[in-house]
Image (cartoon, rainbow, N blue to C red; front, side, top):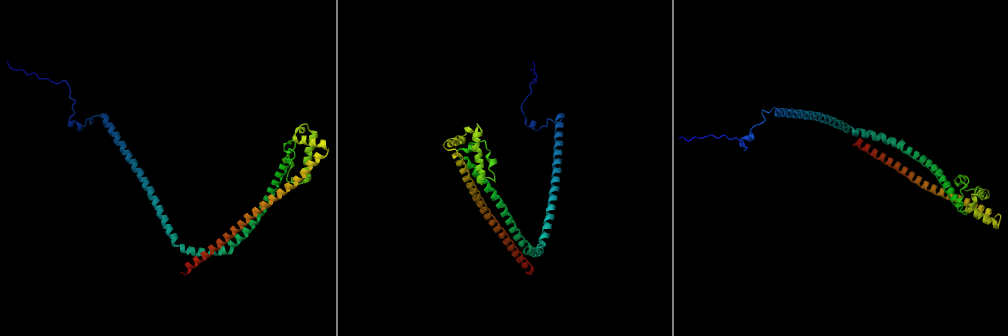
Length: 272
């Protein structure tokens, strides 16, 4: 008997990765992969073209800027070449102008400006003095037996720039408050009216004499405060105007020094 060999065919697929399989293009015949590669190549080319266009625009812009800078440098060189001549003529003209017109003008203008400032300062000082006098009069009137609590009289309307330092006007205002104690039931409950009624029980004229005497004294004090405040403000204004006048004088001196320097430069450029 002959030995019989039966061939066996493997029914399983080997999954062992061979070295040659690493370099085999598996997707060359794949339609989808071809489409992806074509899209990638096309997009890459477009991006390179766009980049090149941007670079061309930037190069053009930089070239224009460089040309502009070169033109400015050339113009600057031309200006610098004629600088000596311009300085020579300019110094002579400016020197004459400053010496003949500007310095006297500044001196005259400075004096007029300082005088106007003094006038304005005097008016402002007078107003501040009046305001201080009014405030002092209202404050002191309020101290007459708690008269500040007497709300039936509008003190700011009664004590004004024409009445704050007038004894008779302040006496009239205080007398009005005194007589209001008898005419108004609301006023009777105030401390001022209670005090004046108590004084009237001792003497019929004691309360009126007391408040009017205080009002006359307050007018004198308010007037003194107003004058003191005005004098202080005027002194401050005079000090400021003196400082300003000195500053103007220094400015004129500086202009004259500049004039001298320009003349020296002119002479150096003219006779070197």
